[in-house]
Length: 639
Image: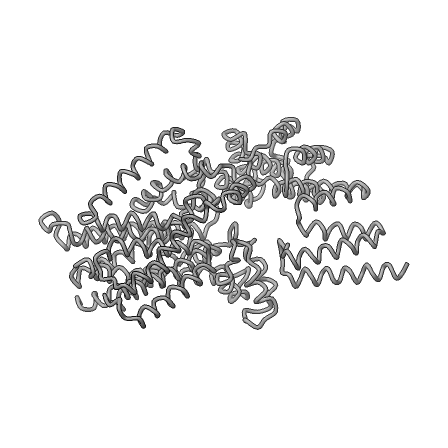
């Protein structure tokens, strides 16, 4: 029995079995949030085949990041036939990728443990415990069960494959072998590119490799050839990645100004605190704290809040304390640098959102591995016997598994999931909106409960106009919900802040309700005043979309002469090809056929050259434009 328990195949089977048991309740959970915008074009693929119409167009149509992430989209395209009524298939694939990653982590842990002088038995135990904790930890639930996070899963899987190749090569301790070095170069280049074209956090691989090289592998032999290779493949890319932001400060600042409510400096300061929050979530996981959304108090200076300075001092003290005695604390230095390596891309100057648990997916490993290695190899038997350590680890694993099973079960019940996230973090606006949205699915009573949740949030956060618009939407459709004072709504619109969230989507929903005759609470004159105010208080894309919505209202009143100039302004501000589609239709209706043709030609150039498509595929958009053009030419001929 002991021989069986120590066999790798048994361990891998155990990883797979426990992962399935913990995650199976959530595999049939619904698609959520970014799943729709990223995957809705799958409906244009006729079948899940690489030769089917639209397959490769979808693969190379990605806009989620600078690379387009075609590797991730390729895996989604293979499941096109399961979209959008079979989320189980997508999430099962995610779980399979997660388990593959855990197997690679198991192998890395085992080899590192042997290198650190553990016995075969204890190395096996450390490897299994590390892989199990990593696989079953609740912090990963929102990565595995959120379909679109396959991008993060794949990127980390390929990075782990590269790391495993590097660990195997270095532990052979034969850096003179040019053939082995060539194979390593090929492995790292291929896995690195696959990771990069899955998601853009892949350059972290370079920092993970350097962490291994200068902590756990510091005393391994390194020939002249290998040192030269290391210079080209590790040092120079790392230096380039560190210096790159210095040469693109202007572009970064523009992105912050356009998309974020915080500055680059504020983001870096805030991350000092967030990284400690991540560490706490890794070591002491809590069920309620592993939702997708977390709003964080922004650090505007080292003293505001004061915990920013304390966090910085703690990081410096910890880093210096370990670095000054690498011989004594080398393993702990490895754990710290590994954690930092995992966050050097996504938790520094890049203008991303502040907080996401999935950023710890691989950064998680170093901390857990070293803690377990120390627990099983450095703790004296006089304190805790080996069997006692096994029992403690087993209890911890059981708690993790129960936690993950509970969260997975909640994913299968959206309103329960939303309630859990809301109760854990009621000050995060998106948790409020998610909970309100799920409550509103339960008829009039649910809508009233949702309105109460939104009212409390609006009272606590008066600057968030997005929340107010959601409350206004509920009042539109449910007469039992007290109407908001139009004057106070307009006053709030006049003080629109950057922290308001996306105001366009709820405004569009309100206009849709009005045009369908389903918003008797607010008349069209008020909605036009609201849009005019929002146009004055916004800029860029948002201003263009508000102008477009105002044009729609004008068209419903038969005021085509006022609507068309608004549409032209909407296009200039938003550069949204959907505006051009609608403008062409209105020009046709107004009998202005030549202008309609010019607009159709402009829309064709935009979707072809600039890939300016928000929904559907390029082929479907071009087909629609071509059909519209033929109709206009037919109208012109008939006259």
